[in-house]
Length: 209
Image (tube, rainbow, N blue to C red; front, top):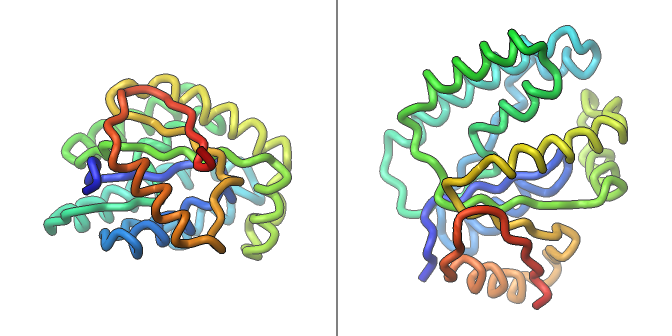
């Protein structure tokens, strides 16, 4: 029996969040909550022109709040999500001015205050060359201009953000060890992992042990 009922999966662009979320939801009969970024037209504009950063983040916060309200209006025994709702603060800190960041922070605190929080966060760490390979292979045109420098800066921003989360356990996983070609082994590895009690804060995990 799993010890956690609401598991969020995070990581850099191209880390494999959605792929793992789908795998876990299917194999553990959980409900799936996926980020709906395709609906954010400002995201495509942002990758072409940084001046659209505030537009993109406001749209993300509004879209996620609507999605989360609708999703949590129904009962769920087990949830796997490919995003952590507070992630907007990571991108806002990177891409916005201090005044704009304060606006996003205020908006999040207002709209998300009644949203149930995950009780476990899985963070997928992946080398930059693998991130770039995954981004290229999925072929989203608006992601083609994402630079290695941006991915590196985002990785550092995630690390700083995770250090400030002190209310839930965070399992820092080497995503290169996730082998979807060994589904039985992978399911058992995560069953063992999710059946343990993990203390709050960051814990580095190897699936190979």
